[in-house]
Figure (cartoon, helix red, strand yellow):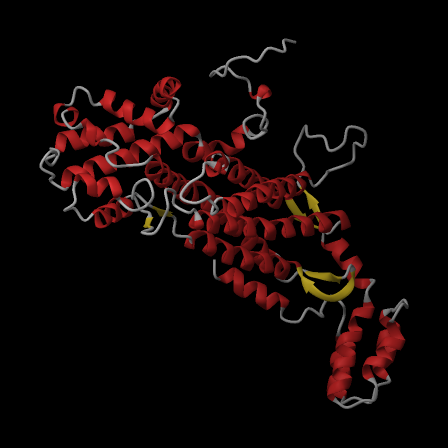
Length: 467
């Protein structure tokens, strides 16, 4: 095998990719490429440059009258028809300029060379802008599109599946574990409701981040703008352009927009991933106890040596990728808001990894959803654990004893149950001997571990009904 690096090309095999997102898992994250790839960054840069250019024409500057409709349409078409061929053309220019944003400016000038109403004013492309005016706004557009069209739709699918399971399993009793030990029973549906409710809040947090942008020049003061046109309200104009692109305007910046909103978004996604790690681990445990079986697929192999195995690989894949994603997301949110004085370049290379961080998140959410879709509840196994845990009724018995003032209720139940094997018979014998009102005695005697689930089913059904 040759050790010489081959030139990057369209024929590069996924087997040669350094990142599994562009190799093994490439098809799982394809939807993000339209928003977070380098080609997507170029398209968004073109969109920002065009918006700025058209906006300048609407200022009716003496040297730049308003563009006619045909010229505007032609400029918008450059954005709408932008694809891989156009990205390659810009990349070719960049090999000469060694500057990615300047390459976009030169490309726009070349593309509009035959549009008279544009070409006579081409020096108003990138007018008074620093590269970061274009870049930060483009990054905001990229993240906004990825959030709206890819990330939130998949998260909502995960949420819907959790709510479906909440409804389906609302009444299915399950033994709880606190500190790994048997504890008061719950229902499977209520446990899914807990995660569904958390995910609802997490989605609201991701949706609620207002992505910000600035277009105010080299150090955030409109220096060059005022030098050319001192009579223009450049702050108002900049706000208008930024907000026309669907972003929030930041009036106070250095050369770069400080990325605080970006950090909020990455933190919100990381918090979402953390709760999904929690979910993945819990379901992995329930599968290992036999509470769930998994749907099998013809031809799939669980173990190369143990033919019987159906491994919880989707939840393991989710957990692993959620961890990778969070390591990157937290670096992004920690690093991006920091820049030495009015500008350093450390954010530039870090920002190129937005797609990697969110790609691992997307991959994990997809794995989690596939795992949730494979779950088959095993009521017999759940009932078996409940029937072997009559000691959990020590809690309701001692609580009713407290109500009626019986002596040392906690201590009596501790003596009866702690470290001992409790059966239905021994628990009921203890209850029968208590000096309780008959109605309360009969209510306790009727309790079983499977029926001692409190409001679990009702809470689950209530949340599921909100779908």
